[in-house]
Length: 221
Image (cartoon, helix red, strand yellow):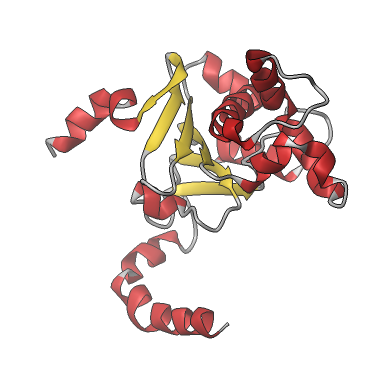
């Protein structure tokens, strides 16, 4: 804990005073523009990757960046989606997976998770992504998927979680009226690159190509 305590001391002494006005403005309310779903993996820092400040992102994290399909059962992800969209009125939702994802490694071979019943149940929300990879490569349903399919499975999982997100009524309503946009990302931990899908494409593209119009605009700022 030494580095944690040292970090808090440094925050109070140096970081907070430097951003005192920002924290003062955030003391009583928040107005984030983006709902950001990502994995619990310690190697991802959404604020660092996006260059965002406190108050910019409404962040939800869990193993595998999973978004369960809408149901009548209340869950943490469902409640967070509803609050972010209906109350905070976010304009964008990013679903961000990442390379070397331990959750997706587990989803490749679900029977191997027999000692982790809650993890096994949670990763059932990734099953459709794994089945798509199996079908694409002609792999029987009872066979574990080789880790050579990991990157493909990670991208497919982001695609499927985006589809799950669309089943939530509050999201569907905003999509139908053009008031919200969904973005699928896969962050490469080693290179820092991001591949994206959504908008008008179901195929993943490099970040600069996917957001070419925005990249051109902000590059001139």
